[in-house]
Length: 296
Image: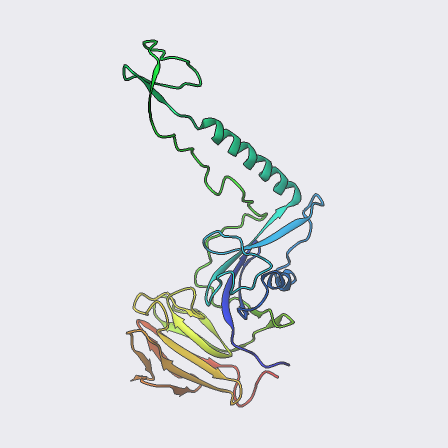
């Protein structure tokens, strides 16, 4: 099995839900999408036999160029990506609707002119002022700004399944896969943190190979919804696949990290059932890999 390489950690949202994906920034965007078709079960045709086109969008609703790399498309660590579909038929209908909308906007554009008596009127409808019959002067008002339909009304397709672009919060336990390295592979769990006390008491958080960032943000590998925990990089938990050992160290944030009642100032080795305190959250460390088991 090829060694794991730490790449960008991305949150991919599709009609079937959300998964975590790791991929190098130089991966081709089109190939990245192709690698996700099988694990995400992206259909090639709809119920009526029309071909389905799949596209990737970023949080700003911009469609990524499939011929460029993820990095060239502005994708970075922790970003959310959204996979959406559109059938050939719906694509044709949307383009037709967009053309009609643009025509309507053009027709709605008009210039009001003012006659010498100070009345404003539409010269397309009246050759002279309808109020006094006086010819117009050269003074005009600025063009009326056309009302442009919202993006949701033009050029977008709502995929089947009622897909929402709102990311699922606190789903750090979702499956993580790696793409863009010639094959799609599972990034296996190597241990867990279990919340013993705090806002998410009873919840478990998966630990994976190498560095795992901890914070409130959904962009962290381990996202804990505790207002006393820093949004990003409150702490790191690291699994070294060469030695099969776990370590904890403080992050760049202001908040402290405690292990078994003591402040952690630098990287310390973790042992089974060590207790970790972050903000108001007390966690217990449960390893999977170690002396008795490791992934081959």
